[in-house]
Length: 134
Image (tube, rainbow, N blue to C red; front, top):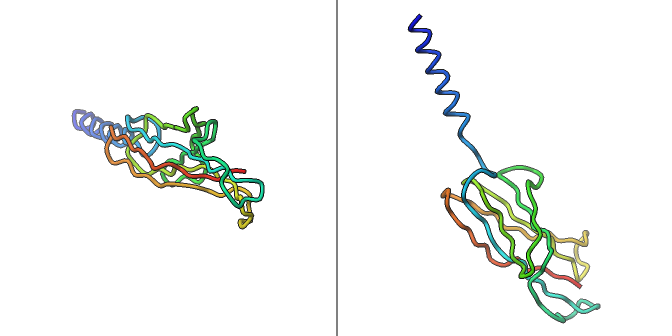
């Protein structure tokens, strides 16, 4: 009877140890931050009329190798965004830019950055996403 209890405890501990291991996503203490910067072109798309940090621009995050975005956030008034409470792992951050010169098949162009968080308390600050608009 003691031997069965011992093996039962070992199996239970092994299950608990493997179930606590988390991959990419929410549940940690790491953060990814950045800003979205806009070049606003004239009607013909030939020159920039003004440039500014974008407010209310959607920025998306993909956890690991997922095929669809896991979360999105709108930029603040100063163009900044922040994804909090992330676990160590690989992430893709992206937004969309307008195709101002009409060279792409789609009017929206993907602008992305791949990020690896290696420390549970890491803060990753990305370079500005530079997008076009008109």
